[in-house]
Length: 210
Image (cartoon, rainbow, N blue to C red; front, side, top):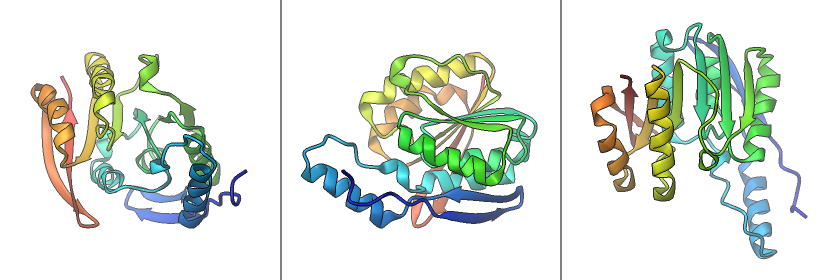
């Protein structure tokens, strides 16, 4: 059994697009539960989903400055974690799907959706290792999703799938050697790139389209 029940305090964030509320798990309860699962010999993954990473902050800032990317558009975020970019998009988008392969993350996003009373957004389970989804969207969000070399082929396939459908793909990532091959393979589709420094970390923002 977990050491203690996870708590998900609600935090309010202000953007020019609007005010949003987001559930963020308590770091201490996350840490204790993970340590307990390790002590019990469980093969649980480290809960990377349970915090907002610099790449998500950078993506959200970029979206807030480029409302035309999501205003009245269909948006999907993959490997969303806590879903911060998706929540911002939901303030103006036609529809938003925030997906992750972990139930804990999807449950947490669902709480944020309920708190904001968004009727145009849903959280969904999806793992790109299981194949391509049948969802349609005009904007695809991928925040810090290219760190695992074992997943890069699936991530590239997913990106190309949506590019071929005419979607715009927004990807944010810190500078990692592991990501270089994927970024190079998509270079011909890159229409804009810039670097933002978030919490002391340089984050590259890439916008892809045909």
